Image 1 (cartoon, rainbow, N blue to C red):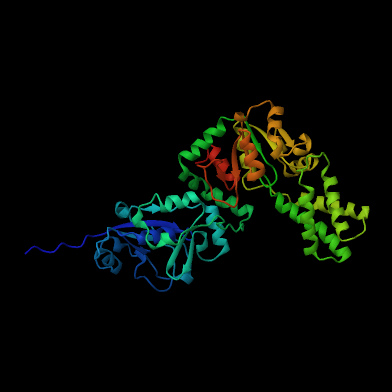
Image 2 (cartoon, helix red, strand yellow; image 1 turned 45 degrees about the horizontal axis):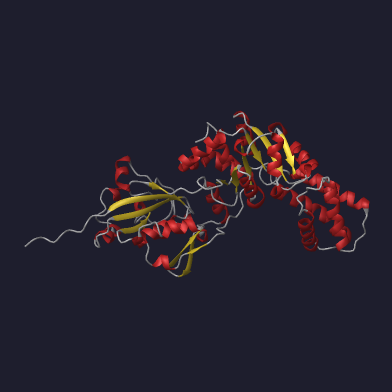
Length: 452
């Protein structure tokens, strides 16, 4: 009588990821496959107890036959045992630091696969919570029932239509798109700089040909244009601080709640800046109008001396709180070393932009300052074409970087200008049009010979 066939021995594979890297999504997909069994921290199997004396058991990789998880994979004939080896240290979770890539003799066997996520986004998650933030990609609607959350239609197509069907059974039925994958905005400029300097170049290497394509495109341009506010410096932050300081003066003098003053000021600001500062007034004219309108709304005296005081408080606070974006100086220096001419194109009063540039100490990096205030038109109404005409160049000779889709990307690209979107709340995307970055430091590394 023939002997029954022995169960097929599954092959071991390692997925290496940092904590809070959304690796659970991939592991859940593997778990849905007919050919995979999954586990976590295989070389820590049966290691429990306190951190002291806690060490990995790499012998498991040399002889797995007595491990329950391996037997569970072998008996039904699974082809692969996939183990997630997560880096990190959290004693409350009985997690410890250990070497996730074991002795070289096992490299060929486990075939390490590293899950890469933008370190800026990882650290933002880490700062927000002491443990994984599943809502970024996962949403458990019911206990033990997984719902996949995608950040775009394209991602959903890749996951659900272009991937082997046997990777999905129950998960596909409850999948949906979530366009507002959260970004917490908790990192300071110093933290971003530190992270990018340590990990930015390594991360960008994952973009391969897309990164080199972008570098080639910029290298061919004679000019590079920038938006200023919230692209090169933290305007929204500094103007918010200055506004609050001025409104506090009104609140103290007339005993009006700050919440009411802020609400009314926001309405006035939106109304008064609708023409994007294209009517030729100075920054002080615009500010005087706004503060006078706030006083009028609450039926307060139009005291010129008090309004002058508000203007002084606003200006002093604004200038004192100005801060460049992460990587701004590095990128500007790189462009100068590349021999590029640089122009600022911004919606704002000419005088305020000149003072801002001087205060930030970046005037020496620019060849021309183009404002809606000077040219008398907005970005959405021919500013880009006016600037090209003034400089005597064609759209093919310039690249442009800005933070707003509506007021930077769309009008610049409509003019035929190659544009790069600074989207700080998003993930990097170098293979889209426009390419998308989330720090200026990344663009510096892409363009620099010292980069990846």
